[in-house]
Image (cartoon, rainbow, N blue to C red; front, top):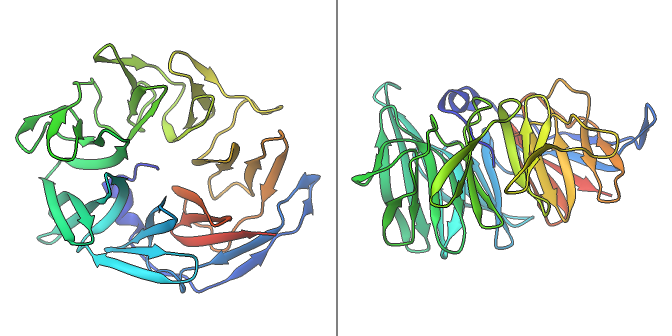
Length: 323
């Protein structure tokens, strides 16, 4: 999932669109276009900006404005009004964790809050006031990781990243990084990054964080069998835990993307709104393309496959139903 800064978050909190449909044409300019139908779901799902999408246990979680919803493919269930703007979610040990951003006192005072939610209610685990930020969540069987911009959590000294075992918080090294926007792991090696510059990619080995220089600033990351794909401003690189290389597919060696989605070993690359089409790579090494979805004004920061349909956020929620 992609990091959304506080400034970007404030810009995105506007408007709604009416429901529209746009069918694809399978041929254009010698490119093969995927057959299917784009559906603008702002009326059906949510009437405000969508900040996150995630699939957890056969359900699609949708966050927009101050509300979090569960979508089962037919029905929408509101979880709660969190009195703030939700922009990340993960599950850890049978509980759901939300990051909530709040502007109070005439938009001068800011809070970032980590909330734990289960069927019994919501627990406020901690909050960061003022200039600090919680930017991203990541979880595995052992820990919930929280990344952002902070120097302590619950009176524990930390450098922009902490971990939680379900009962206790602890620091996770002290990387020399301005803030943490991404957390992931590959072959039991953790890595973190800040999307603002190319020299902020770190991996954790032998109890310390070690830096690697990228070509340009990061726009997204995605885990694959071969390694971590790192979408950058001008290209895509792949990191296998030891080496960093340009990622090349067929005749394409420089693949810029705003968002990458790996699903059943097929890779979706989503470009900026100014580019005519989104392009899609199938595991047989055949490029196929999407036509632009309706009301495609904002860069995509979330993309998931749910019940064989593709869901994206481009300010509001859109679904592509494959034929």
